[in-house]
Image 1 (cartoon, rainbow, N blue to C red):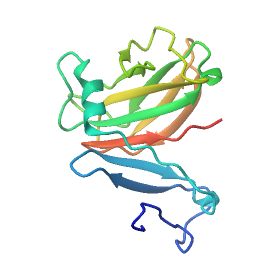
Image 2: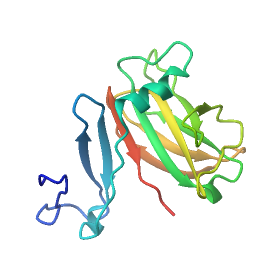
Image 3: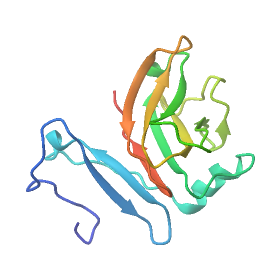
Length: 168
């Protein structure tokens, strides 16, 4: 990467349709992981980093806190895709001791129960997933009938925030 934080995937050899995972980190903060579509590597990509203080404010709202072995997901999706659904994470395998939880993020950065319809921010809704194993999860929005509206596989690691890119 360059001194200004930009990076170039142009010379990287990749398989078509397989994302490249890029990690970035604030000094003393959480590592953030992004899936970058290598097929569109010539297009600029905005990466959103969340400060440690902001993440801690989110996690303060959790009864009992979060395991130090947990990863996190932060996602933003068009409000129209939610349509009565709720955020869901399903751990791969059957890890003992982990019960994945999801919450909507309100415009004021507070956690909200995933069953309550989310507040919109400029046509978008945001959500957070916590207590994620290092095996990865299926993450996305499920309808009230349990049908996946949007889903993707997310590699998760302890102390890493996987930032899901918006898809329209």
